[in-house]
Each structure stands twice: as structure tokens, then as C-alpha cells.
Length: 296
Image: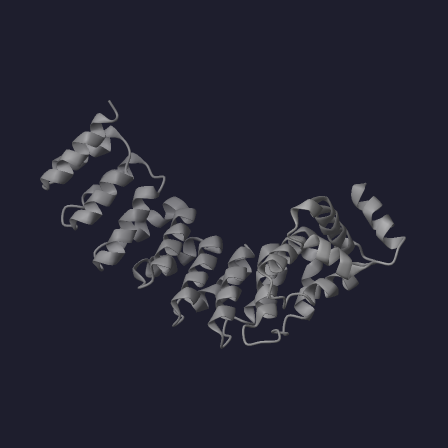
């Protein structure tokens, strides 16, 4: 009802988009009420069939702004408008902006990612091979935020990108949409040279959950870095006691930091007592004993 009243009010007058935009993006706290009202009005206008095209075209025309405040506010408006805005953004997506930063295109990818859904996958995927690494990174992030399984075949193309931040974005995207079939790709990222990739890969494996257990176990021993993140993942999986016991036998020959990680990550007196029988390092043995005492 409130949105209908806003729309009727707007249509009863000449809509001043510049005025609404300036109010919706102001930083002046004394105009908070006007700011919220203008924000709501732009959302309503962007959703109504009579005014949507004009409103969305106007908002997209401001994607090239240098103001981070305006870019965030525009993103919030489009997120509220939702899927009705996608076509209007895609229609202008090839416009990169007035300088080499390609701000308009980066904003388009960001906003489409925030809206999400199957509809954004194909237009966003056009930019995964862009010559600018920032554009590739934005495209992979948006594909992940789409939460669409249709994005998987595109996201996987980014896990070997030469730029570490692009690989991180690809793995972030993969962590959002991966299924058990993508477990090998996630494990592949556990020893990437860039820590951001490694942690994104762990997040993806944890989201998949128990189905990642056996594939992870099978990869123990390839190298110390991968082992560290395999055990880091295993320690956080919600698995039963039998599976936890299975991990123990792999620890005896592992480096001290890896063993400490596991001891710290597992909870429960029974498992901790099993670690005491295994551990030969005095400091780590004392750490386990103290941890057991915390449960008493």
C-alpha cells in the first residue's frame, strides 16, 4: 500500500530523477528522512511497469560515478528492485566508462551479482576472459553470487588464472555453487601460492560437508602445504567419531604445526586421549592433557 501511494504521488508530478538521486545518495545525516524516502521512491519506480525502463536507464547512467558512496547506494537500490532490473543493466553492460578503470562495467557486474539468479549467468560470463584482471575478478565473483549451478562451467575456467586475485574470485565463486563433483577442483586449490585461494577452497569444501571427507583423506601426503589445509578442513567437518579416529592414523608422520592444528580443532575427551597415545612431542602432549582437563 505504501509503495502504491509513493507511485501515485510520483506520477502526479513531473519525476525529477536527479533530485531523487541526489537525495538518495546524500551523506548529510540531517536529511536522513528525505534520503530514505527518495531511496524507496526509486525502488518503486524501478519496479513499476510504467516507469521501470526510464528509472533503470537513469540509474545505470550513473554507474560511472567516482563516488564510492553513490556506487554502494545504487547497488542497494538495484538489489531492492531485483530481477526486473537485470535486462536494463545488461542492455548497457558493454559500456566500460569514461576512463581506463572501467568503473561502469565493474559496477554492472557487481550489481548483477547482488541481484543473483540464473538470468545473470550468461551476460556476466562474457567477461571471464577480459583483458583487465579486475573485470575477470568481478565476473567470477558475480557468477558465484548468482548461486546458479549454470555458472559452474564458467567459474572453473578461472581457477588457473595467472593473477592471484582472479583465482581467489574464481574459488570464492566455486565455494558458493560447488557440488560434490567439484571437490577435486577445490582440493586442487588447497596448496595454491595465494592464501586467499586456499581459504576460499576450504570454505567450499566445508559447505559440501561430509562428502568431501574421503576425497580429502586420499590426497594426504602430496605436500606439506596441502596437508596442512586438508587437516584444517577435516578438523572443521561435522563428522562422526569413526571418521575422526580414521584421521588419527595419518598424523604420526606429520609436522608439528599440522599436529597442533588438529589437536586444537577437534573437540571431545575421547579423541584427545587418542592423541596422547600418538604424540611424541612433550609440549604437544602437555597441550593435549590441558585440553582434556578443560572438559572435566
